[in-house]
Image (tube, rainbow over all chains, first blue to last red):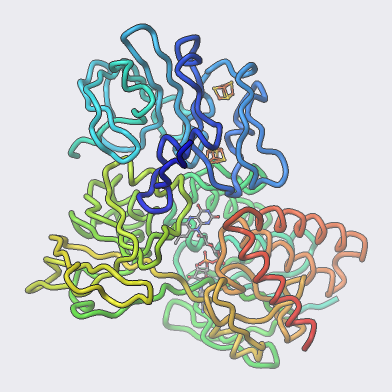
Length: 169
Length: 364
Ligand SMILES: Cc1cc2nc3c(=O)[nH]c(=O)nc-3n(C[C@H](O)[C@H](O)[C@H](O)COP(=O)(O)OP(=O)(O)OC[C@H]3O[C@@H](n4cnc5c(N)ncnc54)[C@H](O)[C@@H]3O)c2cc1C
Ligand code: SF4
Ligand code: SF4
């Protein structure tokens, strides 16, 4: 087996291989079965809002607080509460239904997207992967100004898409 | 019991927490800060913080600052703003200048120095052009004064400060055309660099800025690759059109006041360079003087708050406002939280460095 290309500390974002090696990403089969939480946080940093924001106790950081977050998929209901709580903007929820994939991701740029917007989905290095469409924007007060955007795109890109391209302000 | 107050200089997270602990224990305390608003660095931080719930993680920096400020007001702490401390003498007399007009002396029973750190500069041809600034300066402009310093920004330095400020400049509507880093690997937390990466910002490792050019102000920057001994590699120059360069090349503890107070210093590269020595209660080599937060080694707001608490608890005890058991229990609790914050790949370096500082302080 070849060693995954490591890009986190040179290009700024982890490669798919780096994330898979950390064992954090759901597989395609999981994504087809249900909505899956994707935590892309592979460095030991002193941080745990993902753990404390989860009402189901599905994410564990524990002690010391520099432990990597560990997800118990059986406990996670994909409610999405941890998405805006994560200061690393590192949590999304993805799902595959046939040809269509959906992603819920955190968004902190202006202008705020609106349901119906045609957008460009991007990968971890900001490369445009495919077109997408915004289907919902959650700006609940408890999100503390981090919007949670839901978008749809072609399911073949589900592993690489993490967000959408930022538009001009 | 003392009638003279404990004087805390600097109302950032460290100073605020020290003052809060002192006041809670019943000690008279005066908190001085040169700004017209307390909170220190926190008021520039619009991002959600790391740390644990105990450190209000997930809360935006300025909201943490407001919380600490409300608590200090509720406790009735004597907070004197627009008051710069320009001198301290070994007799613990603090020379304060209020509103740049009136100056007075305050006699302190104990002194807690929480004056933070200063940003490092980097000189290169063209570095004096308008448009070249430190990252903290750019952050103050966008987040405090709501002025965008420029439209196309080059960031020098990939530590957390550089990448966080880059993200905030994008939030304010600027483009970040790149982040250059002289080292072979990026410095900041991966989750922070990933925010820029997914916005399409290119990172250039083993690279530095060669020169900045422009007429009245910055128009172009030339970056250049570096070899293993950090020498420019011929033929790797690239010119980028930028109107802003943000220097995020580290912070140095502000040691002016500790030096005036006679505190011994040491050199610790991992904590920002020259810094005052301190013991496990944050006491400097001068028994009545405590040093906390970035002044006592550049770390984070979460560690700054804990160090402030630790000093506050110990100073209150030393003046008889807390009994031995209460002091030891409080100190052990804050130290447990500090240790927890200093773990992992990033924290371990600081933990080891802090351990060396304590050891050196004991061996004196
Ligand atoms: C861009 C950026 C992002 C950051 N993000 C995070 C983060 O996500 N999480 C985290 O934990 N930390 C973060 N930090 C670090 C954190 O802000 C600092 O570590 C923390 O503010 C240090 O606290 P302090 O109280 O020691 O100093 P400061 O906050 O710097 O406060 C010092 C205060 O003292 C005042 N002062 C100085 N000299 C004098 C004088 N002579 N007389 C009177 N007043 C004086 C200053 O004006 C200031 O108000 C970040 C820092 C930066 C720059
Ligand atoms: S999606 Fe909801 S249940 Fe799942 S980990 Fe996040 S907060 Fe917990
Ligand atoms: S809250 Fe986000 S950045 Fe912090 S540990 Fe959890 S996943 Fe990582």
